[in-house]
Length: 194
Image (cartoon, rainbow, N blue to C red; front, side, top):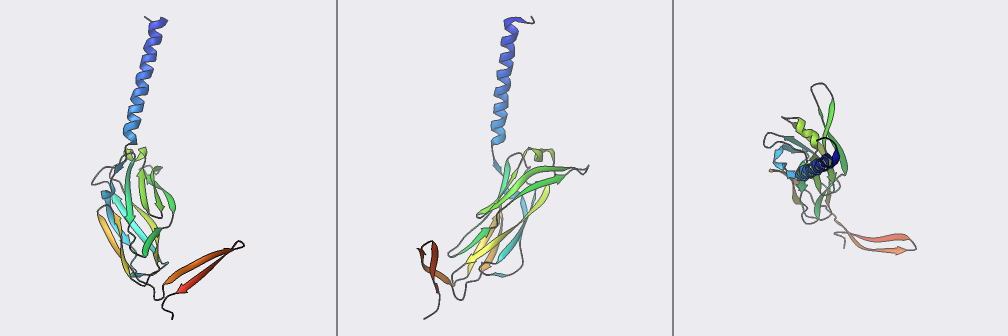
């Protein structure tokens, strides 16, 4: 029977089934999977001792050999702050692009560096590729205002690099700051002065 009320009801039923299916798929795709163990190399520039306000370049390589990348899979790089020493990411947001055999570029995700870490997030396009390898590069700034040296670490999946941060000979300590008519005046003590 074509036409009439039954066909209309049947179409409504199909449309509702399609919406339910589409919503179910969207829910499954929204699940985020951490594949940080796909990092295969972590390099920190070779300068042995890091001083306050120095910059450190980091390179992390990854591969899908352990676990395939899928839409919404992510990888993380973190670092630890110890005592008066810390690492701070230089904020940036970069696209991850793969070139196919024909030379066309495909954006497969992005990586975001913020003050506290790096997140690599893949989109749907990554599922069109296999045997994926790549690398990300970013910079950190060292902060250590104390006299003590500290050992900090950078971690990418199961890879860890240690970074020795040298203490300052004359640590800087802020004693007070006062706002006088919109002008900020700071009183500063430079350590080891009698």
